[in-house]
Amino acid sequence: EYYGWVGIAAPKNTPKNIVEKLREVTKKVAEDKTFIEAIEKPGDEVYYLHGDDVLKHIQKEAKVIAEIDRELAKTATK
Image (cartoon, rainbow, N blue to C red; front, side, top):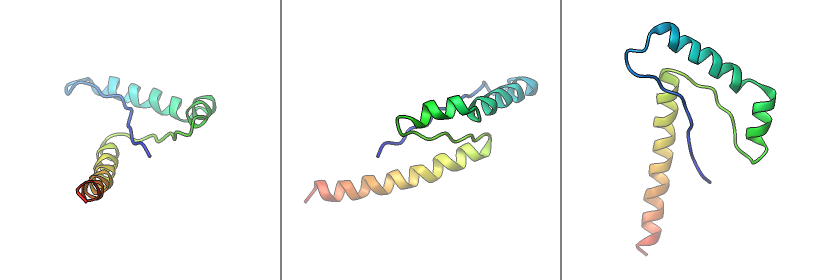
């Protein structure tokens, strides 16, 4: 299994109205049926997250990946 994340970020002091517009457009694309079908066709999934939810998701996934790495390291040293 392969993990990867794709996202959009803006510089720290980007005006709030610009950040909101990016969120609005990104959410609209992420909910578009044609976009979803194109992403899911090769077996990928679409998750729309923003703000703190992105950080929480990455932290959760990082823990899973770290555990897999530890298990692989044990196997490699045998």
